[in-house]
Image (cartoon, rainbow, N blue to C red; front, side):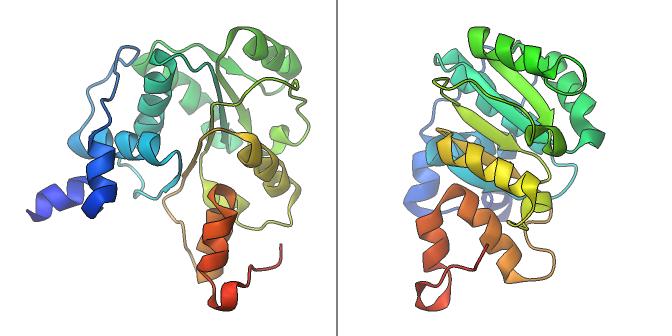
Length: 214
């Protein structure tokens, strides 16, 4: 029982039941998922805007790829992954190895060309937290999913990179924040991440419905 609960992140009740109803489409996936990874992907798909706080090494990247593969199989086309520069190429390698999704690198020379191609043909466009600040995205292109890796790096809402993430999080149909340390020192750090996915919920998490200042 404990092992079963752990594989679903100890999510119980109707929320867990609804997530398990998602028929995960693996048409564009080239990797066998572990039980908890299947549920993680189902949960993200069902809830639409989530924080995935698995510990390091448990395969959060694969879960995110599974979500994108499912959405792509269901006709959604535009996915944006934002990560630290240190893992940019790891993301590209993982997507190419474990899925049939088209991946485009919007970093360095040709970054704007990559965004233009992505807007026309869809796929996964990957950029860094720093580069996101200077990229121009065409109006009228629906962002089906925003994935932010190492999301604890944007817990300070006053930074330019955090503000850039907030803009895209506000317009994206779905948001997946990934971090092994959703709360490092203070509850306010986790609260800051919650604001990216649901401002209303974030307000209710604090006494007297007071939202922390940016």
